[in-house]
Image 1 (cartoon, rainbow over the protein chains, first blue to last red):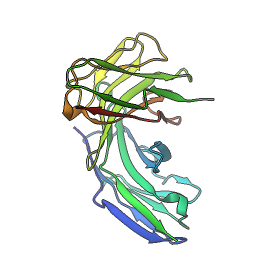
Image 2: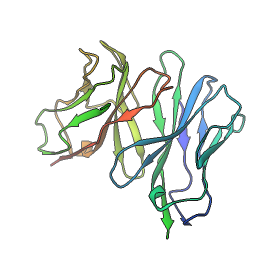
Image 3: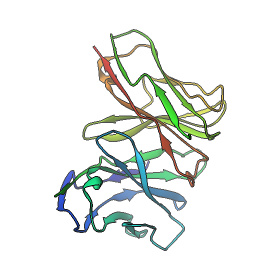
Length: 116
Length: 114
């Protein structure tokens, strides 16, 4: 069974600074996706970024980028030029693409606060 | 508007009284799933469905049932709710298992079992 670990329960950073959220995972499979989701106070789950395991290139979406280290099973999220609207819970998630094991597993989350 | 709709948003019930939380999506998505969110535990998958009449257990299926008779609907059934099922529940859908397209989440259902 796969596991996802987020070791930082809470983080805070000044507005406009860069912050990196860490995520590690454990799996014996080769075919999978990784995700970062954002949950603001509204509780809505919003996809921030996704990474296919077979792609070596790190995914980027505007101010959000990942550092995907497949051998180390690490998937960190970097937020550049942080904004007040980035304040939220952030969840790392893993899904296997192998038949019979298509469960989506989340980490326990990191509460990020952007300080004005 | 593309969306996943859960109902109700809030529910307080008593132990043992059967309840159903509905989930409907209007995007013709194949993959649907249910999660519960508890403090310090993140989101845990309860059940998922890869298509009509195909459902599988997630990580925490005990005490829950689901059905997928139609592609758009994926209700979550608690036959005999207990206080440890007090939680925030999310339904989600995506086009296929790879979630290569965006995954959509419902607004959440806050369930309290007393």
